[in-house]
Each structure stands twice: as C-alpha cells, then as structure tokens.
Length: 92
Image 1 (cartoon, rainbow, N blue to C red):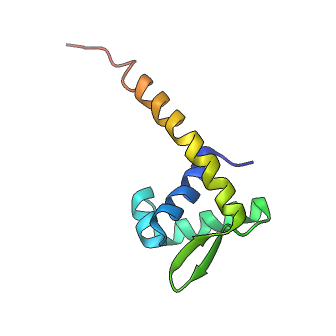
Image 2 (cartoon, helix red, strand yellow; image 1 turned 60 degrees about the vertical axis):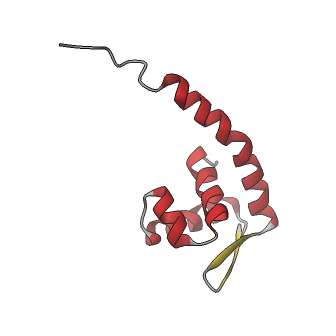
C-alpha cells in the first residue's frame, strides 16, 4: 500500500525531473530518495521512471500515480490549512 508520502515523492521527482532537486524539495538526501523510489517501485512491481543522463521521466505507471497525486494534493493542503494551529491557545 502507498502512503501520501509515496505519492508526494513520485510527484516531486516528476516535477523536478532530477533527484538532486527533488531531494532538496523533500528535505532528504539523494541516497534516501533513491532508496525511497526503489522501495515504492518494489512494492508496486512497476518501474515509475525512465532514467537517462540524470533525468527522470515518467513511465505509464508513474503517470498514473502522478495523476492520482495531483488529485490528492489540493485536498491534503486544504485540510492542513484548516487545522493548522487549531490547538494553539494563548498563554501567559
């Protein structure tokens, strides 16, 4: 099963097209991102990106995940904004 983090990872690699830039956006190391992608692909039994000269381009299965992530992303951001800081109470 995939988590939102998995979808978000694939989405950001797709947007940036390079692991170096995507790893910065995700605040992880290049090596961590490589392992994360390998784990996602292994769990799915599908290659999500074609890798050529440092560029990552989506395969058909990768495109399916990105389309799903694009649908999930605004919902996740909206929910985050609605609950952000709700439990903070003035003190002092």
